[in-house]
Amino acid sequence: MTAVLTRVGLALGLPVVLVAVWWFASAGSTDFFFPPLRTIVEVFGPTWFGERLVDDVLPSLGRLAAGYAAALVLGVGLGVLIGSNRWVRAVTEPVLEFLRAIPPPVLVPVLMLVAGIGNGMKILVIISGCVWPILLNTVAGVRAVDGVLEDTCRTYRIRGTLRWRHLVLRSASPQIVTGARQALSVGIILMVISEMFAASSGLGFTVIQFKDGFQIPEMWSGVILLGLLGVLLSMLFRVVEHQVLSWYHGSRTAQKER
Amino acid sequence: MNALLGLAGLLGFGLLLEVAPRVGLVPERYFPPTSTILGELAGQVGERAFWVAVGDTVLTWLLGLAIAVALGVVVGVAIGSVPLVRAATSSTIEFLRPIPSVALIPLVVVLHGSTITSTLILVVYAAFWQVLVQVLHGVADIDPVARDTARSYRLDRWARVRYLTWPTALPYVVTGVRLAATVALILTITGELVIGSPGLGQLIATARQSGAVPAMYALIVVTGVFGVLANVVTRAAERRALHWHPSMRAEVPA
Image (cartoon, rainbow over all chains, first blue to last red; front, side):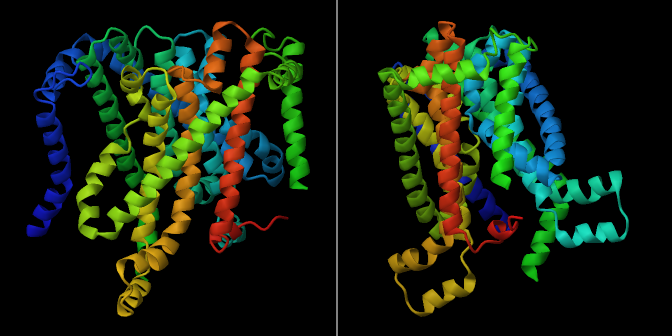
């Protein structure tokens, strides 16, 4: 019991202290740019849980989900293809390394040119940024398939779909998940950036509008909301990862204990 | 052999992008052929403004990376060496880390305007967590036998950091620096693009507004080259620090 209490205390202690410090330090603040936390919290609800939830927050998240899902399918698909053939890998590697090295936000202006400023552009931006970490990690994962397992599969004449599912994808999955995690943070960045550039709705757009209108408490609430979304999505990711990779974490702990 | 194949791949890619607009597969207005882009690039390289922008970008990038790495290592070793502090801060770190740094853009703009300082804050914020988390992992990875040995020999705190913690954490630090270098570059360009602080990103934004499509592509190629450089340099450093690690020995070049 004490152990649980200690852990809860350790987990909550510092955050509570920090928020309290912010709350009291800013309580009497007259600085225009640093409004009291109380004011920010007060405007948070009315700002985000009215029409904006439907008009701005959900469309943003929808675009993120669509782009991320497409990048996942595309990245894993191409990654498996490229990773399982030494020749294809050698030919495409420098091109992929180059494309991956381009900072994704610079694609926003290009894709705006091609696809306008609608939903399509934003989803394309998210795909074009998210696909590289997934793709390259899949390639690396497929490449590093355990030799003994591969020979075992061959000996048992496990081929085709079975082999892909149980050997290739399975052994690459820890790497794929790593790529997917990197892609998620890139995706959030691109979701916000694409809306800051050109949009009439969305989280990034709204926050920039508050900034331009000098609605400072609202802007702070937007910054906090973006932060909370980032945290929430990464927690969600961890839950999914735990499900998908439970076998892997299990085998790792078993190896360590041995 | 692999290098040749890779070169062929690059050439083929360039050729594809040259031919596709020429034969009308994609509109030439939006996708200028490779030769036009490279010609534009050659033109840019001859201009002073280009090199000033490159200088600004590199300065922001390296300065931000250096600050983030220094902070990350110091804070990481300090937090990681004391179990109680580590336990007390872990929830806070887990909370602050996934906050997307672009969320800070409006904040830094109202506070610092379109200056390098604004972009630098974004860069440091984003890159710091990459380093910090790796350092924390590294410090936690200390071999218990080595730790007990150090204790038996009564190494003082500083000697333990120097001869026990640091060598254990080094591979993690290098990984952290590699990740941070990429993130720092992305945030540098993003800051310049969105905030308008001087640098390559700002040139891209200007090129877009004035409809100079080939110039835009040429500048994007430059940012890509920087990204590749960051990868190559940090990976070479990683290979030196991690040459014993199985991941570096997995594939013997055929």
